[in-house]
Image 1: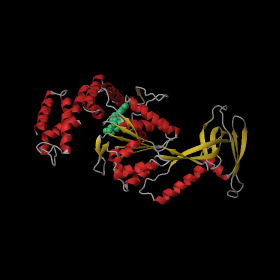
Image 2: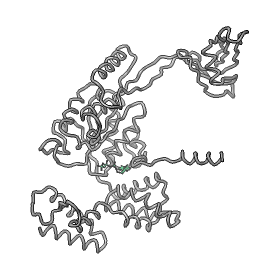
Image 3: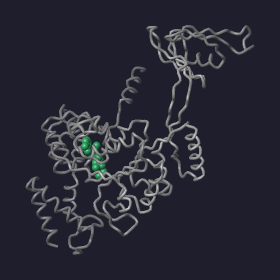
Length: 467
Ligand SMILES: Nc1ncnc2c1ncn2[C@@H]1O[C@H](COP(=O)(O)OP(=O)(O)OP(=O)(O)O)[C@@H](O)[C@H]1O
């Protein structure tokens, strides 16, 4: 029974979720910030990765505040992947906060408060603490037991050996208790924090030649984010925290570490938020703002004006813009390879080639999504290697956007509230134009599809043209 439980719990702990970007481990740059073709899970997109690397260097140097970067590009061209790469390269010491533009509308607080909290999450305070640590190998612990129980508190002696010398320390009741709790015995290697009396067992000494620092002074740093996760924070509380942090900075007890705030889908913000961002970036403690969008020229939310990416021109003017480019077939193939590995799906070369073809004809995301689904299809037929037939099976089960749109166009009359262009005759209607453009874009893709699909597409196109 006990064995069963053990194996059950072991299985449970082995479950690891694989996210859309879990294969990204950095930006894949060398020490001269030159992008390697395939590195740290990153493929291609070299110009954008290099530009992101320069920003990263600026962040690491800590010399700039309030810079903002825009990652702009078509859907699925790796904008979020690059932002994740930046986050991974920064390491744990630099805060990285990530939100999606739409999140700020769904929280129980004002939009600007939500943005303010996101900003503060991306700013770290490193508090420097000088502590005295004694580290060494325990030679002997000697505890004097009081003659009558409870008559007086315990005392004792601890002999600690370092490379240079052996030192005997007098022990008080607190230290004796701490040694007991850690079950410290002769031969253990321990560290004692003199200020708090905390004892940490580092291990056992096998050879007595190890080097230890006795009374070494170390700077212990920790990062405390001065933000709150629960509801609105009153302005006074925020001010009090800021005053305290300013005091610590003056006394040299703390450093401010501006990190990175990444806002994905930035076009979802509205004019008030954009105005807030303009202002917030002026602050000397402001983090680096990285925003991403896949929108073209579109309406700025909250206004009737259109602007590139739906971002007001004054904010756009402050942004360093990095564009991402569509992937080549070869790059898609490499990303498919990496994802198959990441999702632990053994896939035949032929199946990978088919996935690549699908990625080129539909979208990279769709191709990636088919990997795990195809692996399930493979398991069903008790196969060991995902083959083209598995890919074809799931390709027929799950539609990509283009085939789904085709289907919609065909059966639109049977749907509720459809606003498709057929028959309404209004040339200015935005939806109609969008769908028409969509249809026209599909025509080139359909050519490579089956003759049945090609025929369907022609019918639809002629329908759109007829109107
Ligand atoms: N250069 C790359 N190297 C490795 N994987 C990538 C690369 N670019 C994209 N991917 C992967 O492809 C998928 C889609 O990319 P991603 O989500 O980054 O696109 P995006 O540009 O943010 O798209 P959208 O505009 O739709 O948000 C993700 O799983 C991502 O990790």
